[in-house]
Length: 154
Image 1 (tube, rainbow, N blue to C red):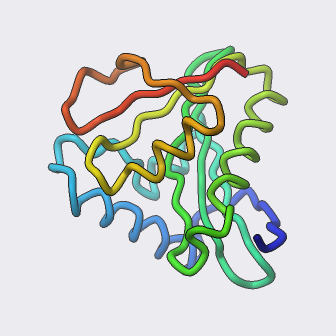
Image 2: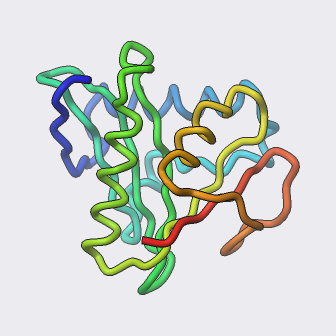
Image 3: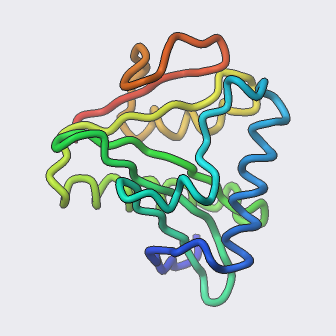
């Protein structure tokens, strides 16, 4: 895996915006619009969200975000690795970075919503291998056949 540099990202850069767009388009490939909960660029700029881009030199490797739910809980959002870096361990590195920042911020639990269709299986396996367990809906989510909800203690 390449050495990654994590940057808090303002979502102004073309490469970052393109990867967010690819992430959103990927959701639409297998999920009906009403079941897509990925954040768009403006939502990723929210006051309760920290968005990172991960870089290897000048190449964008991936993205991920942490949304604060309350004083002790956060939600993993918008994780995506650029196609050229899939299978390199970059997704795991991004996930571990977000988990570490959540701990540093005093969060005690981390939550996520991901897709249930087959193309989300690698993501679900990654999350499970890093200690996330399936659970019911949290926050404002409702039961949905296209969603899998997961959580882990920090």
